[in-house]
Length: 279
Ligand SMILES: Nc1ncnc2c1ncn2[C@@H]1O[C@H](COP(=O)(O)OP(=O)(O)OP(=O)(O)O)[C@@H](O)[C@H]1O
Image (spheres, rainbow, N blue to C red):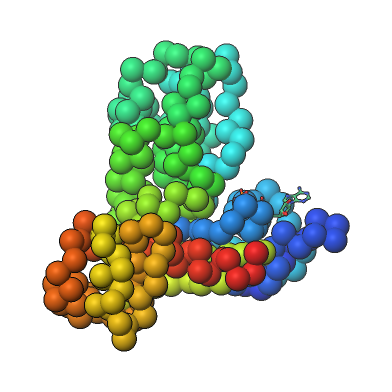
């Protein structure tokens, strides 16, 4: 079942089409990355899904209870972290929620009595996510949730989003941090200029895109002759349309020193390829 459905969505601001006939779906139980350059229409789509702004045409719907984090958190600077979380629970009709446990899960127990106005950007972001999660939404919509988070907080975020999906929830998150998307999401939707340029399971989109790093790229490129291998920056080669066994053997036979062979960094090459053409 699809928990998020966007169909032929268009949102115009005067003569600007922020979103231009966009369609995609997010199956229930998945964590979907929403990628695209600045101004591609991600925030606008999330705002329509939240019901904060109306579509000019088309539809954008999320099944069940929707929660999440957009850029403005709406917290009162003179309220404590504990009080804001408690208020978020009450607003969602969850007066019975264990606020201390929710703070601990967000690594915020030490900040419980701090006033929100005195919190760092990252702490405030973590509080936003905790406030969204305490409402136990079915669908979590997150606009740049990784922004301002330190590596520990990023790991906690990743684990919490995966747990939300494992429990049957659904996550749609926009991000510019591709490494983080690769580690967190099982699907991605890529948009450019308000339109979809790719959609699907991350593994399938990245299948047979392998990144190699070597101090001897020329030697490697020569050995990969006949395959779709291209240079992608100093010492980096992307091989498309070949399986890891074939690439691994070619690398071994070349005798070149290899520093890395992975599909991780291939998301960046895929993304740039998809969004560059129509910039
Ligand atoms: N309220 C508004 N009034 C006028 N134009 C707007 C408004 N909101 C967004 N836009 C325009 O719509 C386009 C899409 O913006 P949007 O914020 O959805 O992009 P985005 O993909 O979220 O970008 P970013 O990655 O920079 O956050 C941009 O050209 C933006 O200037």
